[in-house]
Each structure stands twice: as structure tokens, then as C-alpha cells.
Length: 135
Image (cartoon, rainbow, N blue to C red):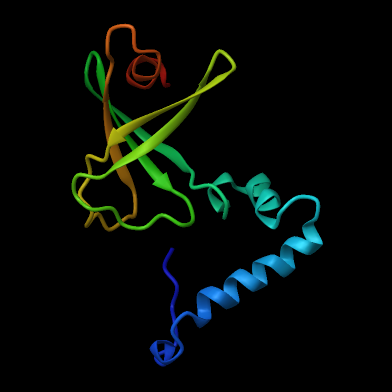
């Protein structure tokens, strides 16, 4: 999340994160029994402040059993470093599955999107769904 801070922000270390946290607590009091983030997610899941989410923007078929997925991360995503990975969750037959995939895009990408390349593995439910079954 990019936030513009005043030029004197370094004179008050820790002040802005603490203020933001306290403001969130006050807003959550009005949203009780849920959190403000729960209502934001109804409008746009990428606005979640509790859970990092991403939306699939495009799918490129690399080979018959491999695809590159371009993802738009939501709030809270910080630029990755080369070699990092991300967890991807998908619901199949009513069960939620999570797998980890290496990020295949450069950290310097200007549009803020990331890519993962998924190859279907024999018997792999998640990799098969991501590499073959996504529209």
C-alpha cells in the first residue's frame, strides 16, 4: 500500500501506524459485530484490510499443461523480491485448497501486478485446476 506521508514524518517514528491502528479500532466499534473490513470486502474483495487477496486479471496458455496467471494484489501488498513465493487458494468441490507458487514476474513491474506460472502435475487437483480448468 502506497501512502504519501508528510515531509516531517521521520520526526514522529511509529506515529502514523499507531494512529491508523487506533482509527481502525474506532471504526470497528461502529461495525460491530463485524469489522469495517468485512463491509469493504462486500463492495470489493481486494479492499480487505484483514486478508490479502488478489484477482486473476489474465491467463496465458504457455503449454498444454502450463499457464501463467496475472494477478492484481489487493490492499497491503508490498513489492516482492526475486525468488519469493505466494500462497494461492482455490475452492474445488466445496473444499478450500491452498498451495504455494513462485512469483514469476519481476519486482520492478510498474503496474503492481504479479504473475505465477503453474504446471499441472499428474494427480494434482489444484495445479490441474489452475493450469487447465480456469476459463
